Image (cartoon, rainbow, N blue to C red; front, side):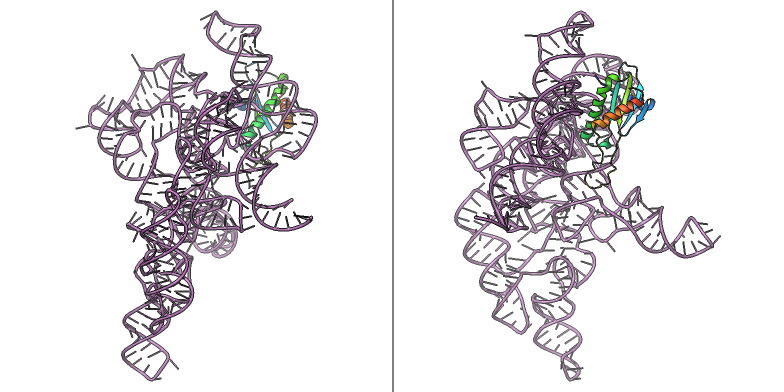
Length: 121
RNA sequence: CAAGUACGCCUGACGGUCGCGGGUAUGGCUCGAAAGGGCCUAUCUGAGGAAAGUCCGGGCUCCAUAGGGUAAGGAUGCCGGCUAACGGCCGGUGGAGGCGACUCCAAGGAAAGUGCAACAGAAAAUUACCGCAGUCUCGUAUGAGGUUGUAAGGGUGAAAAGGCGAGGUAAGAGCUCACCGCCGCUAUGGUAACACAGCGGGCAGUGUAAACCCCAUCCGGAGCAACACCGCAGAAGAAACACAUAGGUUUACCCGACCGUUUCAAAGGUGGCUCAAGCUGCAUGGCAACAUGUACGCGUAGAUAGAUGACCGUCCACGACAGAACCCGGCUUACGGCGUGCUUGCGUA
RNA sequence: UGCGGAAUUGUGUAAAGGUAGCACGAAUGACUCUGACUCAUUUUGUCUGGGUUCGAAUCCUAGUUCCGCAG
C-alpha cells in the first residue's frame, strides 16, 4: 500500500528541509516524517509535455518504487521531481515534441541509483 | 497500376505473473454498546474518435421570477424539410472551381438614409482634359480664339455611365434595329427558392452592408469550484453605513415586483455522479436527414491531488494524434491505417 | 476544470480601411587630443493560416502562444 503526499505544505517542507539527489531524469527529495511508513509524491511540470506524457512518467515512477518498497528504509517523505531533458528542439515548426519520454528501465535504474545515493536502500 | 474523389470501419491482437480505481458478496478476519467502519478473499468491470479546443445548441441546478414597454447589445440570414435545440444535418435553387467523379459559398436589402472610394485621372457619380463636328470673329494661311452640339476614340484607375455589329448623322449618341445582358408584366412548371417562354420598356441608382445601417427571426443571468444536506460552531456573530419619496437587485431606462446594504474572521464529510433526447439489429414510411414500431439484444468508467502500468512469450503493418472530471447533440482542430463505390490517365488481353 | 483578456522592431508603446510611426537601445559618421553630451544617417516589426475588400495592423473566421480570476 503506497501512501501519497497530498498537501502542498508537505511538498514545500520536503523541498526546504530535506536532502536531495539529482540524476539525469529525476531529482529525489527525502525527509524524515513521524510515521512508520513512507509517503511519496511525484511532480511533473507542465513543460514536460501533455497529460499523456506526464501520466506516463508518473506511472513508471510509481511502478518502480512499488517494486523496491519492501527493501526501502521506512519513515520518510519522498518527492520525485521529473526533469525536462529535452533534445533542445531547434525545430520551430510543428508542435514541439522535444521532450524525451524515458523508458521503464531508465527510470528504474535512476530510482535505484538515487535511492542508494541517499542511503535509503 | 497510378493519381484523385466520396462514403464507411478500426484505433495493436492473444496468453501468463505482479500492481491500481469502482461495483457486488448469505464469504473470512477484525474494531465498536450500536449504527457502521477497516483489512483480506472471490467475482465482474475500468478512457476517445477526437476524451482536445471550449466555438455553438440543449438538459440539470441556483439566482430578489426571467411580467410588460422602450432603447441598446449579440447572433443568424437563398428555398423546403429534419431535430429537444442549434450558427448543425439532409434535399433542392443560384453562383464559383475542376477534363471528370465531385467539392466549395455569412447567398436578404445599395430605389429608407448616412459615410467611404487613398494615389492616379477631366471626372469616382449628373463629369468634359485632349478630342470630333457645325457656326462666328481675326488672319495670307492647313492657324488662333469664342460659342453651340456630342460622348465614338485617347490616356488614369480595382472600378468610367450596358456589350457587340449594322443603320443613321454635320459629328455623334439605344437615336433606330438584330443578338446577348438588364428591368417590368403575363403565362406555364415547381410547396418554394427559381427555371423557361412570350410581350413590353429603351438602359436608369459604379462599388462597398465580414462600413454605419434597414428588414426578418431568435436570445434573462450564471455555471457542478452550480447547488443541496450533515457536522463543526462564533451565523440569532462583530464592525461600519443607512433609517426611507433614501439605497440596492432585475445587463440600460420607465412601470411593476422584491430586498436593509457592505466588510471582517472560518476547517471537514456526503450527495449531485451517471440509464442517457442512449446504442445495435430488424420491419415500415421517406430520395435523404430522420421518424415510428419491435427485440430473452447491449446498456460494462465514475476517480476526487485524481485510478489503466511493469515484465515474459507469440504474431503483424512494429503501433499516429492523444487521457474522462456533471451529462448529451453538433462544429472545429490534430492524426495512423484498412475497405468499398465512382472518376481520369496509362498498360495488357 | 470553468470563466475572461492580450499579442505591432531587442524593450516600452501609437496608429478609428489608403506610404506602419515615436521614445529608449544597436550600428556608422561628424564634433573632441580621448570619452560623454549633441547632431546626422541607417538597421530591424503588425503571432500564424484562410476569407471579405480595389486595398487589411485594423473587419470576419480557424488556430498558436502568453497572462489573469475562481478551491
